[in-house]
Amino acid sequence: MPSNRVRLIAGNWKMNNDVPAAKELAEGLVEKVPVNGVEVVVCPPTIDLACTSHKLEGSSIKLGGQNVYWEEKGAYTGETSCAMLKSVNAEYCIIGHSERRDYFHETDEDINKKAKALMAAGIVPISCCGESLEVREAGKHVEFVVDQIKKDTEGLEISDPSKYVIAYEPIWAIGTGKTATADDAQEVCGAIRATLVEIFGEETAAGIRVLYGGSAKPENIAGFLEKEDVDGALVGGASLVAESFAAMVEKAGE
Ligand code: PGA
Image (cartoon, rainbow, N blue to C red; front, side, top):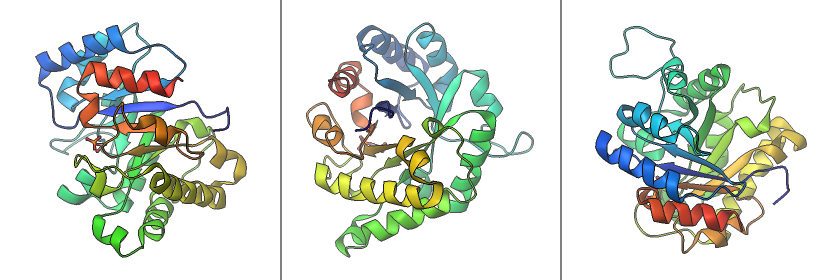
């Protein structure tokens, strides 16, 4: 991995942890996550952002949202704006997770608007992409993900490549215990990098972090991180236990 990309481990709590549980997990993370040069982000549910932010104060662990709406404010019941994320010191936000695409019908156009709104607000998008099992079995996974990347990044202006992150998460490997192999991850992450070179040029593409996600855990993370175009992980299940998340950060620092 070229030295200009700082490894990033991001935890996606999904719809887990009420306020007391979020506080407890945040306390455990502050105690256990090592400070080792790896960038560490946790993304709690919206209701837990404020209390988690409070617990993380003074630590090296950063905060992220799981979703955002691109409008500034107004009659958008149930939504969260960039300014609201900023008000709890969230520096990152996951967008385009496959669960949002599948269950909430988010489109690449929505994801593109979210990325633009976040970047204008100074929040780093962690923009997710990834293919279904059906697409993978048809051998069309690279083509499918490249197409998502092109649509999701359309018209984006990236002046600082460390402020835009992509997470490749094959849907068939999310929460299933079925991981892609490190070579599977590299095949797609490498194709993502090549697409970023086409869109943004060599220098910018070389600075954008591409994460792997999908049943990543302490036992398998090292294999992914050895790969040239894998710069970290987006972690679901294993981010809900302070010890296992801390162990992944530890491994990423080795
Ligand atoms: P998982 O989830 O680690 O539980 O597979 C990853 C994700 O969906 O971000």
